[in-house]
Length: 448
Image (cartoon, rainbow, N blue to C red; front, side):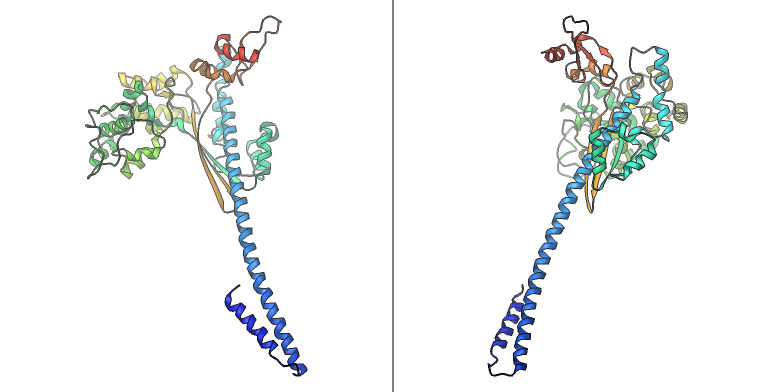
């Protein structure tokens, strides 16, 4: 309440009570009127102050509710995206069981392509990209997918979707379609990674442009290598590793990290990539994620951009072979996918040693990594999350790569004949029984 208003009210009371007792009835009524008006003024002022404070409290409460609802929506969206990826994993792995007859496996291998064709060229994980999904969105999903949502979704996830306040929007992208710059952090792969990146930078148009920029393809690739690789040895194509860093014209602040990058934006700290034009041209073809040393099949030829694939299989200084591009385009137009080494060899015949090396160590036919962007919205509040998710590969491959760690994917089963308990594990979800030695320690713990 303002001091002016209080002063005005006080003066009104003083004026009212200075009226003499012998005044006329008219004056008494006037005093009463002044008193009532003054009292009403006090009440209005107090109520205005209370209403103002209540409005702030309500707005704060609504804002906090929206924040929590947006957070919940974003987290639910992330779980929903993971659910879609798990469905895609099961569809893609339907023919992975090595115990299946060859004829059956061949027929089942066509299922992923058939599913994609039925979804208008989209994968299961990309099916709902861009759709705002909340409680009302479930009916739209039912109509879109023609599936029984209640039977397909995890009960907890279904409940969360039905009760969500606000909505979420997911965007699932295949990161296995890009070249992983963190290959340079894995020493045995640095040579093939360097040659691969040189080829990406060496297409006819890009090579001339980079020359004009002062960063020829080999120098730019060497700068990336020197920044990420774990040694501090200078590359012949880049000169002194520290010569391009520090203060001064044409230099980049900081020094080489000599470790894996944690975000794509870190590329901007590398000489050459600190140029916005160079970054914007090449960043869409690159990705950053931890390297699994035993897993050399890093780029999925079924979905990678054709310009990236054609650059990788073309030696520097040569024109891209139209026949390879035509083959890739024809296969994709027919909905055919690469699923065997021989098919990859036929698609990309190698006439030089490095192309053969890139084909065998860099190119593959499985999607292994996804980038999930999810936005939760409630009222005027938004929450955004970004996740990098590695897809579960075939269970057999997983067990062969890391027998100890992947015992978590097994369940213990006792011998049904009543004999001594044996260390057998059943792979989830395929149901295949694997050799006992692979999960022996796990089974012993379970047997107690």
